[in-house]
Image (tube, rainbow, N blue to C red; front, side, top):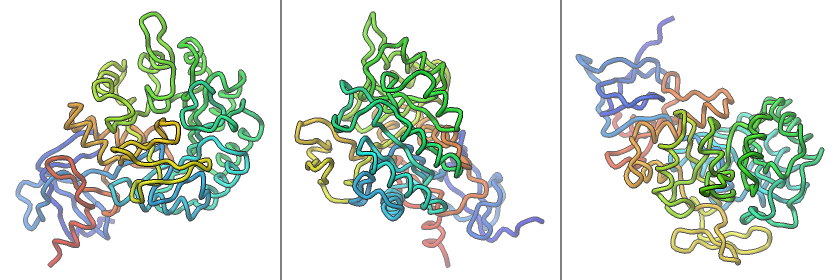
Length: 379
């Protein structure tokens, strides 16, 4: 049965999940996009300044709105984090629990099971504790340990319930066969916080890892005679998240990595955001204060402790500072992460709720959602 179109939106540009298109109109029905057609000759369409795009997908979010996943590992905490990031154009995310005591992971898994169906929550990203001590970053050394049956069981609990899981491990933190076992469950195994060699990283990819966590950060560097994890990542066909905030990775290196990948659409943006996004300028992690100083989150040791950035700011920086084409930048914030994590995500606009479609101005700043646009234009 054909849906009755109740309104038309005619943006200057439309990102349809793959390309930026001009001269298109979105036909609305029941608060959703029912059709997309050329706007030429259409009577009564409502003009929307800027670009309409599906909302952003962030696969690494430690916190937001003064809530940190590790200190509030509950479904309510997850919902608060999702709500904080939705204000900035992120409509789907993976709350991320980092290296901690086993009971924290247990609580986070229980929360993810309880959070099924809550808006914007895709599942759970488990970052650690099976990492390299040398590349642990802000992760507490006392909790870093080799992979054990506890973590495998927790991942199985989530996957048996159909919940998306990304798990970051260092190749040196797992035993042969463990990556394959996690991948066989349907978990996305991502390599990160590793001081290993390129050869070891490639062996982990052969075993079933399909991704790298925050490229360049917390991994052995790429040198002329030692490619390290960084070089293995860039030369691979695996997916790779990257933080684009001007602090974690130099803008020149972000652009270099994107251009150097052997296949397209394998790089995606992550925020690695902490509770300060949409919240106050400090929080407590592992009993120590982390403060926001000149746009950087630093712990007592002066080390970076997560990021204070949104996907919206990352996209704008990628386009305006790094010089990446808008179409590619949007794919890195929407399509590539949606493809990687699956979870029933749709990267296009058809059938999407208006609240899940965002509007960006000429400077690629998020100004609101299509729901806001229709409310503001209503007679």
